[in-house]
Length: 108
Image 1 (spheres, rainbow, N blue to C red):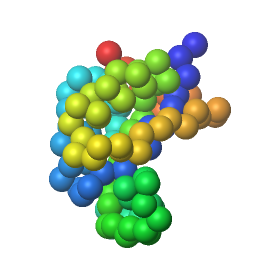
Image 2 (spheres, rainbow, N blue to C red):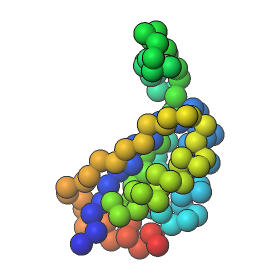
Image 3 (cartoon, rainbow, N blue to C red):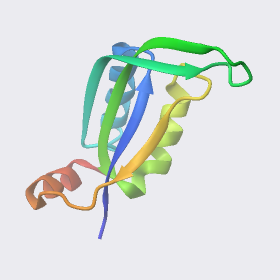
């Protein structure tokens, strides 16, 4: 049985998140995308430096099946503006059966 996952991606801005989401939707790799704009991030960059950076970024949440993660990751890396973008998946243990059925129908 296919397992649902949520792919978490941080993008530079809302426009980049929308472009990534639309490409993945058109390729039927995701069933749905949620975009959360105006997130504040704090991090060290470049990694060798000991200086804290601050940035306004956008969260992109992608609903899909675990088996699609590798291809989704590849597509995002091809489009993303960051040298080292944050991309990871979260396994979903429980999901409403009606939603899961709809989601599977949307995917290739």
